[in-house]
Image 1: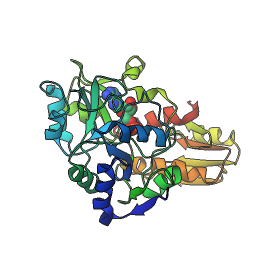
Image 2 (image 1 turned 45 degrees about the vertical axis):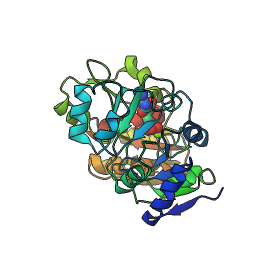
Image 3 (image 1 turned 120 degrees about the vertical axis):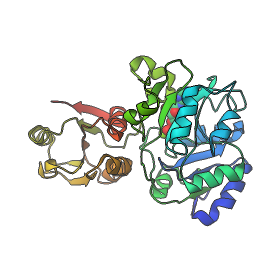
Image 4 (image 1 turned 180 degrees about the horizontal axis):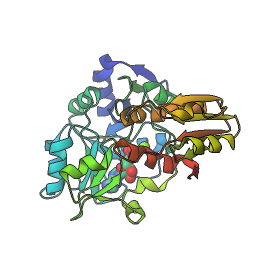
Length: 329
Ligand code: AMP
Ligand code: MG
């Protein structure tokens, strides 16, 4: 199959592909998604096959707004889901609620819940409104790889495996949505994401953070994930001297990924890829930096990162999944 990249002029064609049970890769504000009609089990089975995604990792459903959420859930919406969607939709926030069975079990990986979000990206919105059904879409990468934030990243991973990629430029947030389980009396942040824990707590003060005990509730979190080819070494420190020592121990055949700081001159390395000076900038550049680093075929990719506030937590979470080794003072 030949894979074409089209611009926004290709949206009508992309809707027709979805309607016919095909797959379309499309931009969202978090990362690029690999989408199918969420009510079509055959089409969604193809998402798992094309990505090489384990069958026990459910898909997120993309809807245009809160009214569509009502049509997927059993009984009245939990107050927490109402509050969160009012505050953060459209945007990078996914709520987990009880399924009413309209979405095939395969899409939910057999769970009696659904994970739903309304993306804040004009192309994603146009596809959902055009199809007039929810669009099931995980990130458009081969399973286990860094998520794609540009159309070219999707092509690198999935060329020949789908017909159309709609190019909408680089994803603005660059990290996946925050996932909140609203089915329990105390809601739980299952996956930290583009909306920080502190901001979510302003709306849901009782929000709990998922510990190891609750990881199984978001099945996707148990796999090695987000990882480039070269082994990732995570230096969890922003202490210049510590970073300098840790880098010296690695030798020069490494690519260093780091936010702006003194470590930019902290040692002899193959190449330095900057993450910028703000958490938002780092979030936007993170996955592209991992993919970029791989192109140098280094012995290791060394990432300097020690922030856990706001988007910092989401990056730390991805590094936990992607790293072969963590170096802490
Ligand atoms: P991805 O779309 O690949 O970025 O991953 C979607 C994330 O949402 C994974 O961590 C899934 O395990 C999680 N997820 C999807 N559906 C559910 C659900 N019904 N309950 C809990 N977590 C879910
Ligand atoms: Mg993913």
